[in-house]
Amino acid sequence: MKQPFTASSSSSSLIRKARLSPYLFTLLAFIVFVAILYGEDFVCLLGQLDPNVDRLATITDGRSCHVLGLEKRWEKLPFSIGKTPDGCDLFSGRWVWDDSTRPLYEESECPYIQPQLTCQEHGRPDKDYQYWRWQPHGCDLPSFNATLMLETLRGKRMMFVGDSLNRGQYVSMVCLLHRLIPEGKKSMETFDSLTVFTAKEYNATIEFYWAPFLLESNSDNAIVHRISDRIVRKGSINKHGKNWKGADIIVFNTYLWWMTGLKMKVLQGSFEDETKDIIELSTEDAYRMGMKSMLRWVRKNMDRKKTRVFFTSMSPSHGKSIDWGGEAGLNCFNETTLINNATYWGSDCRKSIMEVIGDVFRKSKFPISFLNITQLSNYRKDAHTSIHKKQWNPLTPEQIANPVSYADCVHWCLPGLQDTWNELLFAKLFYP
Ligand SMILES: *[C@@H]1O[C@H](CO)[C@@H](O)[C@H](O)[C@H]1NC(C)=O
Ligand SMILES: *[C@@H]1O[C@H](CO)[C@@H](O)[C@H](O)[C@H]1NC(C)=O
Ligand SMILES: *[C@@H]1O[C@H](CO)[C@@H](O)[C@H](O)[C@H]1NC(C)=O
Ligand SMILES: *[C@@H]1O[C@H](CO)[C@@H](O)[C@H](O)[C@H]1NC(C)=O
Ligand SMILES: *[C@@H]1O[C@H](CO)[C@@H](O)[C@H](O)[C@H]1NC(C)=O
Image (cartoon, rainbow, N blue to C red; front, top):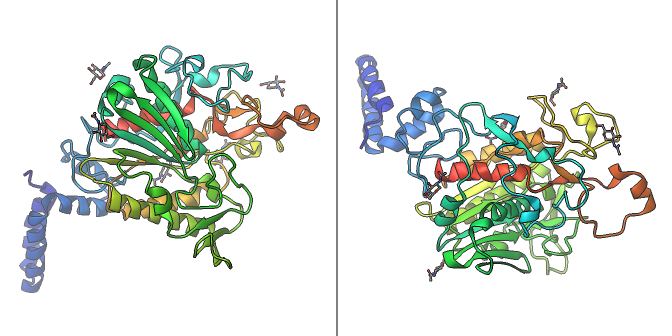
């Protein structure tokens, strides 16, 4: 076992000081003893107190103690084959134009993209949004190796759980992989809340499970989701969670549905109760409750030695041009350029929710791989589906006259931004 130098170098100086007080000496001797006993964990523990994360990282030696990356503790994560260079935050970077390696696939070549996301088919005049590549400041992203990903999934089950934004990331993943599988050896089927892509010869599935709050709610119907007067049921994670058991890699998201603009209604009993016991919590408190439930489920049902858990942060929307210095009353409609203000963050609850996530994950005993895609997606007001998607209801003449009124500034065209989220997932999976 590698001796953690933080512990041993501090011990010599500590002992020197300890001559001043035998009592203190006993205490310090005990700390040193604990440090040796629990060697690596202790360094990790110190790491959380130590602002000098880089120095710590130099002794990690392929293991993972992501003090800020929320993958606590000293352990080799399942599926890892290398590591991201020390001190490189993959989520801090910039977008660069790259028409030689992007897009990673063509819209017309991936039959699995739902018509809400096929922007070219629905008349988007430009393709600029397809050519941006994310470039972290501190290092390069490993290129997405579909063969490696698919081989890794052999005999396994990968599952995306959450709302329609997670469904977009799921479809992107399927599009990135399906070319390797010949016709007739793959399928995609939907059973209520569950959509399953099967790679038959790999005995692998990539699945999406619709649970916009993760917990049980009155918006759970996979086809007709209730949008107004949303109610989420406290402590109900197993209602959906029983369907996630056995996943080898699981990718959660949840955010948008908590944003009611008001307090969140939380049901304490059951939806069947005659008189419902409902309390109202602030968005942040309700969200924290949901996150804690998710972590509890993870601790009980996932095996940290064999499986991985990802959580994708809030997907930003671009519904108000004034947020980025545009004209009042406009939104992402007709936007084809990026926001090039490095500190742009946007309005709504993104900041406070991010704090809740950081808080909850820092205390997590299970290593969660966090895909912090919020900031990099904030810049992409150009990448939404806007009006270039299948409309389920016929548009009214008023809408047609004013496209801003029905532009979708929440979801993203594919190929596009969400392929980058999967490149980041790939990087975190194999090079944590
Ligand atoms: C992709 O992964 C496969 C399987 O691990 C490997 O054989 C191949 O060399 C990789 N390709 C590239 C371009 O790294
Ligand atoms: C296929 O994978 C599942 C897990 O997803 C496993 O339980 C099963 O044994 C595998 N079957 C074969 C034939 O490898
Ligand atoms: C879209 O924006 C361009 C400028 O970027 C402008 O010339 C064009 O008129 C706009 N189209 C609509 C329908 O607003
Ligand atoms: C950049 O964004 C930040 C945060 O949203 C804002 O305070 C600042 O004014 C913006 N800068 C410019 C030049 O628009
Ligand atoms: C995610 O990234 C943003 C900015 O890029 C940062 O402010 C935030 O603290 C990060 N969140 C967590 C939980 O690490």
